[in-house]
Length: 236
Image (cartoon, rainbow, N blue to C red; front, top):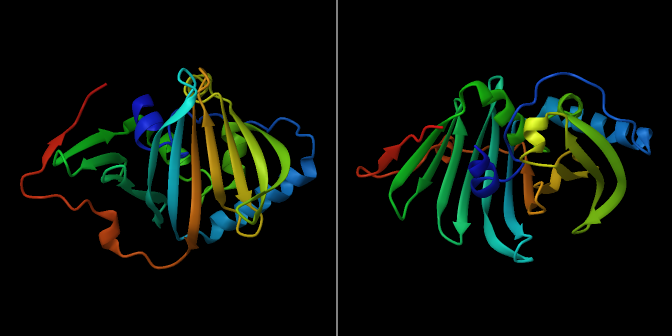
């Protein structure tokens, strides 16, 4: 799963043990944090769909440079009590990632291969990271992270609140030491995310052209494979 989070779909995006309910640590400005979390709660209540363009940049500390840039479009929608996600990665080469029914499917057209990861007992944890800043509530964040409000910051002309999240779970901290979120103060959703790994590498996810609660066709949440596509399911 660590390979998936760090290389395939870094948003937020996902993984590991968000169990246990506890309070957030006292931030420097608790009133500012409360306002942001309430805005996220309201956005989560009204959430149906989100569509956005993205750029994911991976920084490697050992070479001191960004060595992997992916861009494309990401889609989210609520399906009953669950959330489905589809990422259409267009550059540097086409790749499609679908999370639905507790499974992560990665389709690589060049190899004409689908790799299926069954999240199993980690399904709740994976979904929590999936909706990090996109349909997830502020109260859900409090269950999983110690949160510090770092103040306002403008990102590409959008007024945001910057939050630092430190996972409560030691297992998660072994993958992500901390996460920074920039939350749009008007819409209560994330416009930028930064995931820091313990060794100093990080993944920066930037979102633009965000469309909230607009209709997304069902076909978007299907992988367009061929009659010759090979499906594999790695274990471990």
